[in-house]
Image (cartoon, rainbow, N blue to C red; front, side):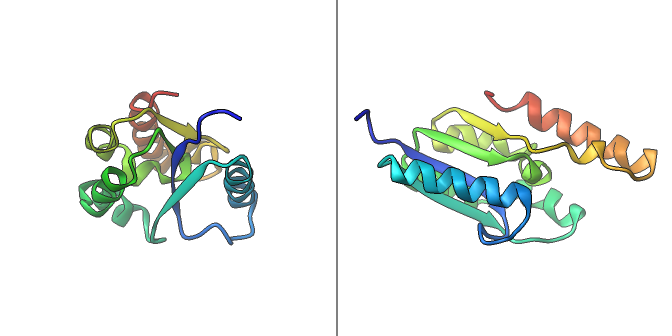
Length: 132
């Protein structure tokens, strides 16, 4: 058996939500734990997109990341509006690689082009700011 990893996972809501992405995240956590790894989950509350943008100034998630002594931080891409600016400080606090789990991009959903331009910009900054 290899080294036990301390893994962090950032999501919205909770792992018991019954949609594809959350089922995947939940199964990933179950698998990692079954391998002996330690997984800490940080869940931002579900809010509106503008509120999620304000979460980039959260100190709570920084304290959480620092206290977990993580080897790797996984972020559900759904959380991109809360993390696109925060990840610079989060990388410092966690001291480990940040990996995004991408189920699909919000900007690929059907809606007005104006809205998707905003989502594309924020997602691009987020994706360019992670390690993988």
